[in-house]
Image 1 (cartoon, rainbow, N blue to C red):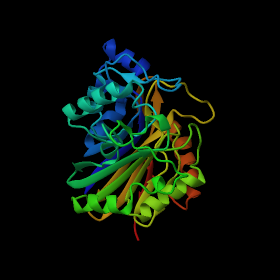
Image 2 (cartoon, one colour; image 1 turned 180 degrees about the horizontal axis):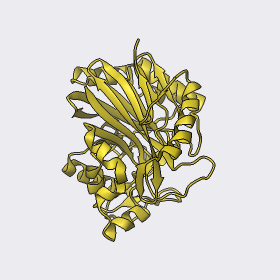
Image 3 (tube, rainbow, N blue to C red; image 1 turned 120 degrees about the horizontal axis):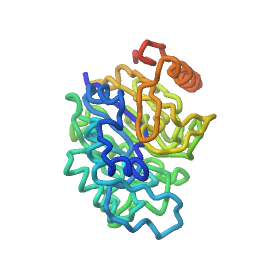
Length: 328
């Protein structure tokens, strides 16, 4: 049985990188949650920045924010036991294709698998293949954010989907998913960066896309983009983590939506698929994440319970956080 951690957005640029430049240790970024991450067999995350020394930001279209992390950010990923990252998002090309290529090189050198962006369209849409805890995983990564970043033919970019286009909105398609299984995947994950920021529920279109993906053979949907955690939906033995929220960044905190409230989602899975989900509540501080105190955990868990109930999912409250055992 593998124990796989899922977390949301990791933005290691700007002031996080400034901290690393001035001697912040990679391990300290994970606070007291770091040991839990390292006890898992591996962690999957969305890397929402380029890791690059390239100084020229994206200029082909107007863009307000450009997130680029220093090379030492790779050591932050290593310290957090990050084994796979999703790159299909609206910041991976913030420093042009040169920044993307450098990011890919750093990840490859560190042995961190990745999907969702590449040197051509085929590479961007190809799944990452990795073994975690003895389970062979294929991870597809797609986004509906930042159309100008889309990979097309032999051009580098992201695995971009237009949910209004029928051909686009069926990727990964059943053939691609079945091919991943034929290549040995026992657990197929779809990591998707979809929808606007600061919303507590997925749109009808996004929810429909994800349920259709499950029908095509996806075991786990790993959602992110909203900056706040959304509910968990169970579809048969498959799980849809609609949004795993933020996990490490330097962002300002919204006092109402509380984007500093999040979770690490621990999934226990084997060749039969997902078996158990455990949510450990965390609080994001400046350039650091830590475990929620008991007083903080109460409202964080209560919101997730209410959000998930809308999808018919009933969590059990535990001393550690929340638990969902899958039985059919």
